[in-house]
Amino acid sequence: MNPKPLDPGLYIVATPIGNLGDVTLRAIDVLRGASVIACEDTRVTGKLLKACDVDTRMQRYDDHASPAVRAKLVEAALAQPVALVSDAGTPLVSDPGYRLVREARAAGVSITTIPGACAAVAGLTLSGLPNDRFLFAGFLPVKDKARRDVLNDVGEIEATLIFYETGPRLERSLKAIGEIWPDREIAVARELTKLHEECRTGTSGELAQHYAAHPPKGEIVLLVGPPVEQSLKADPDELLKSALEGMSASKAAGTVAKATGLDRQTLYARAVELKQQ
Ligand code: SAM
Image (cartoon, rainbow, N blue to C red; front, side, top):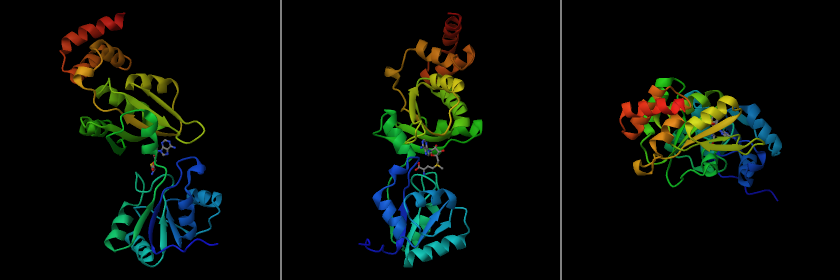
């Protein structure tokens, strides 16, 4: 028996982030029943459709598409079922779709979501970091100052911070985090749902050291635990030791002084001692 035809509207469909087995039954039904699938890359989505035995027409779409292309999709969604997917995971989450959804909503299109995989949430659940409050902040900027500005902006929020990251940039991001928060708990969740899935936790210094020796491949979610309360903070020696893994005594003293409010000169003297031990 054929499933009931889909009503007209925009269907936001999450797709797997690596393991094809994570496509949902509802996602397959909607992709099969849609009149067109708006997707970032027809080759990428084509592979998923083939694996799921779906032969719906695809149309390339991202948020840089011309307003005319978007208007056509909105118009189509008023009369037919239109599916929106991204290359992987949940559309709109660091992926195209925002403009389309806004314009569809403004035009009175019926919009529904078919939830599924999302790397940010998968990484959070795997990390063991506090998950009662979390802030997803997308990709960190590439340039040093812009990255530091973003980190300072979100750093005091009492929540686990979630960033998307790439292998080549991970080490620099870890170092930048270590310069501001040498003591915060970090998790690197890599290749989620894939063969080489791993989740490694530690301080930024420990993780930077590990990934310097083992350059990370594949896709990464970088998570930073919430600020540690002053009374719960590790003792200054531990903070200095961690900071000294990636910086000079003077810089380590400055970093720990900033994080703890302790006297920089005293910390510097102790850092020099620790370095000599
Ligand atoms: N919309 C997607 C989602 O719902 O997760 C995210 C798309 S964004 C363009 C791609 C980034 O998501 C990657 O650079 C990586 O940071 C993260 N990501 C996607 N798949 C991942 C995976 N399997 N493991 C770890 N991170 C992943």
